[in-house]
Image (cartoon, rainbow, N blue to C red; front, side, top):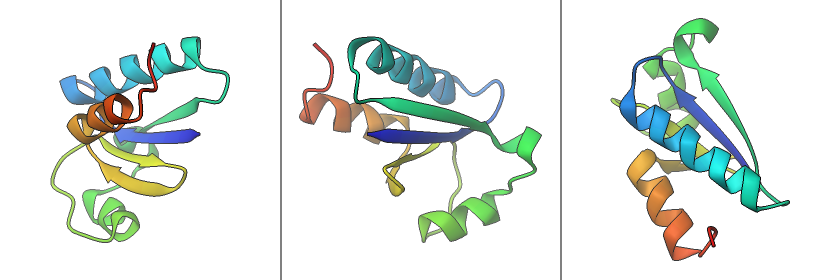
Length: 86
């Protein structure tokens, strides 16, 4: 499983998503993630909207295996419903 988190500095939900991903990386051999700082990379919400397929107003925007799943709350629900953490 490969997760990409598009976020920005100072965003508490981005921090939570990264912390959850770090936990998953420690516990699972099949989990990898990448954090992309949208400000440092010059990525706009309009650019993210094109990738997600709908208007994006918030970060983080999280992709699992190239599929957009939403933000931090949706990511946490995905991890819980798939029992990814022990």
